[in-house]
Each structure stands twice: as C-alpha cells, then as structure tokens.
Length: 634
Ligand code: PRX
Image (tube, rainbow, N blue to C red):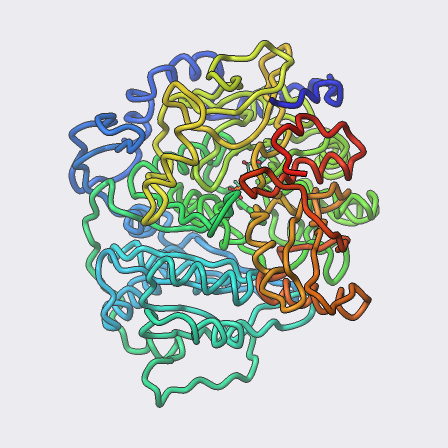
C-alpha cells in the first residue's frame, strides 16, 4: 500500500517566468513542444539531427525485445568527436571548454582545441596500454581536468569507463571495480576536502590488493601530495609520464549507436550495487536536448553543475551535456562553505556563472548562514538555477529564489536518476513553477503515477512513479545482470512500464510531487545509499552479529542512517565501540554513509522468510502505526 502523505504538501504558490526568460527561451511554446513529444520516435529523431553521424540510423526505436529497447539502430557515431572535434573545426575552437577551479582559488582552463589535444594524447596512451574497444577503464579521481580528458579519451577509442566517486572508500570501491572487470585504473595523489588532502592513492592501493583484473594504475599528480609509485613493478605510472610524447592525433572509433558508453554503479535495495549501463547515441541525444531546453543554453553561457563527476549528474551535466552543446563548463573541487559559506557565491561572481545547477542538500546547508553571504557577492550574471537529487523543500526553494535569484531567476527542479541518464520530469524556463515540485514530464517523456495494477491514481493520491514509454538516454541493462534489470524495474507493475522506485502524487494541475523511495534505498544528501550495503559493512565488524538500518529525517542531509545492531556475545555498545563502528563503516563505504544514532537491540523485526522488515523499524521510530504486521515472525 502506498502511504498517502498529501496533507503534507500544501504548497500552492505559483511563480511565472518573466518576459526576458520567455524571449530568450529555446522552447517558447510549451504546449506545442509537448504535442510534438507525444510521438517520441519522431521527436527524438529530430533531436538526433543535431549531431554529426558517420552513418545515419536505420530505425529510431527498436522495440522487438522489450524491455531491452534500442535507439538509432545501425547508426554510427562517436561521443568524443561530437563533444570535442566538432567544435575545434568551428568558431568555438579557442573558446574555453572546461574551467576548473578549487577551494584554494586555483584554476585551470582548457579551450576546445587544448582539450582536443589532451584527449587525443590520452587516447593514444590508453591504446598503448593495450586498452581496446569494449575494455573497461576505472577512474577514482577528484574533480579535475584529467578526469574529463580520461573519460573523453575512453569514448574516443570505444573503451567503457566506470567512474567510482572519490568519496567512496575501500569496500565500495573494490566491489565496483571487480564487477566492472576494469583493466586500467586512473587515480590521483589526492583530492582537496575542506583544506585537507585526502590521499586517494592510499585508498586505491588498499583496494587494488583485492582487484585482480587491473593491469595498469595511472596516477595523476593533482595536489602535490608527495606520494611514491612503484614504477619498477611496471604496473604504476604517472599520468604525465604516460602521455608525454604521445601524438595529439588519434583516430576516432566509429561506434555503433548501441555500443556501451559507460557503467556507473548505484545502490539498489538488496545485494550488491547495480552497474547501470548506458550506451552511445541515445544517451547523447537525451542529455544534450534536455540541457539545451531546460537550462536554455546559448552561446556565451558559463554553465556550472556542482555535482561530482562520480555520479550521474556529473557525467550527464558537468561533462557530456555541456560539451555536446559546445558550451563552457565549470568544474569545482570544494565544499559549498569552505573556506567560508560564501565560497560558491564567490565563484559565481568571479567567473560570471550564468546557469547554476546544484542539490537541495547544498542549499539547505547554505541557508543556515542566512542571506549575508549571497548578499556579499554580485550574482547578477545568473539567469537560471536548478536542482537535483532529492525533493527540494519549499523553504529551500524560496530561499534560493529570494536570496540568490532576487526573485528574478527561475529554478528548474529536475527529477531523474542514474538509470534514466537524463532529466525526465522538470519545468522548462517558461513553465509556471511551484516550490517543491519538478512540475511535469518534459516533452518526449511519458511519466505517470499509478497503483499496484498499473492504473493511474486519481489526482492527489499517492502511487508509484512510472515511465510509460522508452526514452533515448534510458539505461539498457544492469551490467552482467539482465535478470536483475528485468526484475527490479519492469516486473512488479503490470503494463510494461519502467518502475522508478519512487512514490509520488499529482496535484490538481498534474504537477508531480516526489515523496521518496518506495524501496529500501536511502537518499543521503542526494546520494543513493543501499541499506544492504551499510548493513553488510556493519556485519563485517567483529562485534556485530546482525544489523538493520533505516533513514532518519535530517534537516540538512535529508536522511542520516539510524542503525540497529545485535552484538555478538561479550560485546557492549559503549562509546569506544560506537566510535570504532563509525570508523569501520566509514572505512568500508566512505563519507557518503552519514551515520546517526547506533542502537543496540536484542532482535530485529523479520518476516517468516527471514527478511528484515525495515518498515516496522521506521514506523516505530516515527511513532506511527505499524501497519500490516501479519507477515512479522514475532
Ligand atoms: O528518489 C529520487 C531522487 O533521487 C533518486 C535517483 O538517485 P540517483 O540515481 O542517485 O540520481 C540522482 C541524480 C539524478 C530518485 O529516484 N531524486 C532525484 N531528483 C529528484 C529526486 N527526488 C525529488 N526531486 C527531484 N528533483
């Protein structure tokens, strides 16, 4: 049963776009665009024309093996070519493609031509390491230009990249790298985090002890952290040594539209993380079109997406989307409030950011410091702002709108997922906005809120968020696990629809309000964390016999983890053990696993078949009715 939380959602204010926004907008007539999008095949085919194809597709959408959809079949294209080479032979050749900045005020700029040369060198270097089309290259890197270059070098030669977020730690890293069968790992001497340097190479070294497939480790000198590499082993090499002397001309691999592009791991409700697999052409069409229309990208824009490249937001909208549109993308390595809570606003002023895309958790964090900091900076370059990752609380929306946007700038609250690859539910700049909702499905996307039987629920009622028709940037499968792909997303709700795993409701205007996950996935500061991964980390500690975790509401992070542990004989939960457990879980998973209270219990609520009923723990925590307990063992 879907819990109806409609009473909580009373936000009624509507904000309309001003004439300047409408005048500039790529999409001026929302109804007409929605009408065109009702036929996704012709709609997305038209959008695919923006690219240079080596060979045009035979069929836009192949639905013969549902849910294994294919887009632009038999087409030949290359992402790297369209994101870099295409602009080198245009008047954007000397325009800045990537602007890197960090918390120490350092910066690095690469024009499209400079980016082109770097990508070509790295592509040649990877080839010399024996990387071939279809091989996987893992990256464990901070936000840095080498990360972009390495990703584009892979896509240039048809290698599949698998980026692991640099905030994940040994356990999570090993699991992801082994599942992807990576041949090469690219990492760095460190990453900056609030004035400190986190030694990524040290974490990588520990992980590598358990990763037999890695043949070469490439190390970027990023922070100047004086690390040593064992060059003698022949397995480790510095990035600069690797590319030194390489030619800046590497032929582009003509990729099939459906050739794998990247694997990105995300958390599911059970078992190991899911290797979400994206393929080439459909992904390109989806991310470029959505970025262009939702953030209204024009020549002269300076685009800043604060999302880390270790997550899908960074893949689609820090790198590929903006470069496919030939815009300038800013990547920033640093926290929103370091060295002070004006750090991000300083970046907006210093570089003249025009489009700013961030996450609700960051806004909630900055809101705590009031309007003092945004007021210290000239933010008049901003034209559109956006958010992703979790529900944007109306208070946070209003703060961003009033204090940062000075009531003039629309906020695009975009709903999407690692699996969807691109924005799915979102306003366009011309849309009437309500704080707290991503509004409506975008043109070309058919989303709905349905009950267990797949029937649309009446307006105002809670239900499952589903996507009813295929879309180009959809993931094609879970890497090496087609069965799980079908079972997790396409089976539970009848009608051949994609089950997003979210609970939502529609209001009287059809606007969709996202209420959270329907499964056991936690959303911590916009990062998906699987309960089972955290529980496994706890249980791998010698003191813990069993464990269950739930998300507990938190004003800044959205959720933090509340853990219930059954200890082994002879252990007591004292301050030392709590500290040790915290360190242990952090070591295994990294700082994404934000632990709240750890509570010792004698028993966990379980079904008769032995599954932990986290729902009962959640209800108990929130002081709510326990609901149906007929399957509870005891
Ligand atoms: O629950 C939804 C939430 O984030 C989940 C997807 O997480 P992930 O795959 O890590 O991708 C995050 C970045 C695209 C969704 O199932 N979510 C994402 N955007 C929103 C959101 N919840 C509410 N509003 C959003 N705008």
